[in-house]
Length: 468
Image 1 (spheres, rainbow, N blue to C red):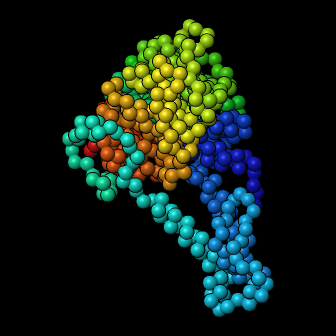
Image 2: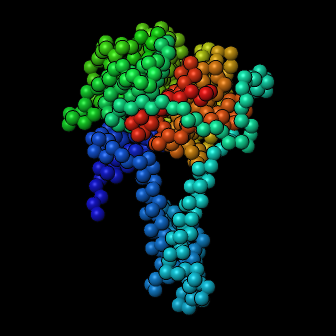
């Protein structure tokens, strides 16, 4: 048996990325130089590091409780990967030497202990596969009364319908990490993957014609290995697509895929790109700084958040921030301005979501419902409403990896590494429909015309209309 450090590092990198620690995963990939393994080991299943740890823990459990004669001691104390195990079994020498017939049957050479552990894991997995019919949602009563769907929704306690009419887009050679719909031209989708390419797909021609219009290639590493496309964003006019790579390459392309501009690479991963509303300025955040996210408020004002626990508001042309917000006690992972521009929402490793106003030094709202790090925050896409959604590492069975609102603000779609996209009703939090993929979901985006695109770890993009 050969255990290579590169393989261990690769599993750690995959665990970080699958769990949503994108900044940490890019930093670890950059420092450990394991980019080439994405091509050498293309079919690593999601959650493999956890599976290896679980099996190793079971072996340690059996080894610890195995007597010299091959029988197993019964023990009810939990076995943890951290700390020294304190066994709850009786240690009296006389009892260890003389087992009753029932004890022998219960232990039987240690196999029962392994069997019981496997049953617990199977029971746990079975519980994890159960669909939850409700999502935590807090909507004002006036909002609930004003929204009346034009079709029948599943009631509470009923299973959501399965989405079966799906178009699969194939062509990428590595896991697809990103997808984004053109905001103006219907049925045009851009995707980015670990094969060093972004692709622009034209879905208006139907399934019979070749779907993708253009393949946008990014420079490979010095050893020839392709790099991840780490950011992908259309300008508001839908005429330009900006892409960024793990190697620090920043490019702007025409809607047809023709290259328009390539900035000099800095050999540092780019983790975020944002166009302003007019489309004449493009923001970028590099991994060598402390900025973790950026977002425009208007054409000249934007905000940045960072690992130093602060949020800064900037204006184009000024070298110093015009406003700062301090209140988080952990890294600030994500920020998003309200569609009306009045509020700024932030999420942090301290487990909170805060809402800020330019008129106040302290948060106007402070949400503390999460138990662990909050890594994403988004507003309902309506100027007349102020409803914010967040995603966190709460230790839930199916941690949400990505989510997106429908254009009308009535639904939320979430993607997870349990290989499912779930569509929820914002009105009452019930699960509306479910799509089961063949691998983990890296990204999910809802088009203005109703279709959902899901970027999947098995190199495929799934497109479907949840209302059909």
